[in-house]
Amino acid sequence: MSSEPVTQLPIGRVEEAPAYGAYTRTTSGSRIPSLDGIRAVAILLVLWAHTSGARGYPDWANVWTSNSHYRLGGLGVRIFFVLSGFLITGLLLKERAATGTVSLGRFYYRRALRIMPAYLAYLAVIGLLVAAGFATLSRSDALHALTYTINYESDRGRLVDHLWSLAVEEQFYLLWPAALMALSLAGSARAAVAVVVLAPLVRVVAVTLAPGSPQAAGAAFEATADSLAVGCLLALWRDQLWESSSTYRRIVLSRWCIPALFAVGMVAGVSVKLGMLVGQSLISIAIALGIDRSVRRPYGIAGRALNWRPVAAVGVGSYSLYLWQQLVVDASPGSTFPFPLNLALAGLLAWASYRWVEQTALRFRDTRTR
Image (cartoon, rainbow, N blue to C red):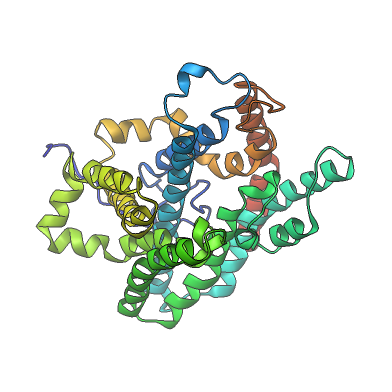
């Protein structure tokens, strides 16, 4: 074990931050170390998956098969999910400790103004492109996208295909705060454990009996909520485990335990059913442990990389990047925008959305909730 200092920070004010996006702060107002960098890793994995195979993408860079690239994209989304469960639960626990309850109205209001302006702006742009004849969108896709249920649409159009993960996030925001308010902390933890156990079973049963379903694809909430639940459990248990379990401390601080757990999860994915039943859960747990390690040890090599300002800046814009990249990034030889122009355009769109849509909405929200 290294002698580098261990940083133990409270999970505090994260009102600005879904898993995609930043402004993650403690109650003292300082930023929680490493989390923006973790977001950057997640969004870069997604962009890699979406860019690989695009026109102009170098052949030498396609070192893995197309399927492997998409597994990396799925890994990026899984990181976002675990991080979201961790952050949102931390926020709710702080409110519950301070007030004895959770204000659902305040939570939903702040979530809506953080997430929906850019989301609706994206859908509006899609609508304009459809009206001008530059794109197509089915009525079913439009309805599901507007109602955050696109994850239950099996045959999604390309321009709204990526919105499935944002729908999962919204469904989590709808359900988990109410559960945390209604249940004791022990009851909330038991509910999260039940989700971690049951969601893999849903995936395996679905891929066996209904292979074309959203559940089999891992897009339905009940089939993918285990990643979110692992993040919730991290927020509920991390401090208690750190203080009471030397084994947990050794695992978190070890250089090998987390990579080994992750590697076993990835290898299990070679078998579809084994990957769904065991592999994805192991990967989610490895991600959660990696988050805890990165927050507690921001001064190691990995910590310094995650907290490097350019990397953190990518994490700050990760929600915008994820949302808008679909317009210009297409992993096919016939893609409209070649590599690396597609990435430059995605960055430009994300910057414009973050500056003029998201920050405007956040300023409005903050003036109304002071």
